Image: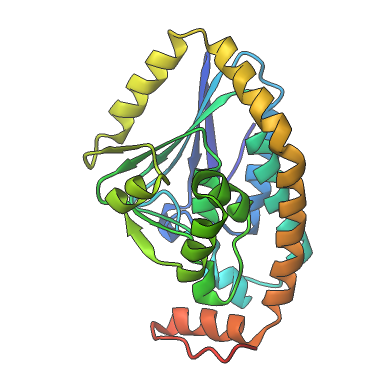
Length: 260
């Protein structure tokens, strides 16, 4: 499997998937979304791999969706196609017959935060910044963001954090239950390696059965939410508030939302 925006390394019983657009803080453009969908679906055909680590190259895990793509700066983008890629990779990741670990440093924002939250275990460095910040550009979470936030927080708290869209320090995210481990800056790889070693020395087949039982029960709900997110995102994509949000982001100013 060869890709241009991600790297996949398979090392016997574990695999490492690296988001690899460091010049753009690993922002997810259409190509990365497609490659993530293709890669995660193909990983279902790797029965010997029992653990998948997802991380980012360079200064960040990922800044989320590529704003330039949303502005059309990189050419015309079919919105329905984008949402189909997002739906595919979110579902493929959630149903992987592997234990998944998100290794987060720097920013994990928007769609990238949805991806991290879909993981079985999230390890974040102390200086990491985490944000479900779709609201800042007049959108709703996608990539199953509503589902994964609700799973960790419950409905009431999930709504509040989605609406607030704040950037959280790692310690606050830990206190909220949105990450599982905080480690010193630069130590994430070593700590994740230790976790992987412990998992591989455990009866991991039984652990994977538990994951399958619990996720199979929830999969229909995730599928409904992904469908609803795609529908809502298409609706929000055409609003004045969304256009104002992304324009203000690029111009580095506060947006002036009007509720339309």
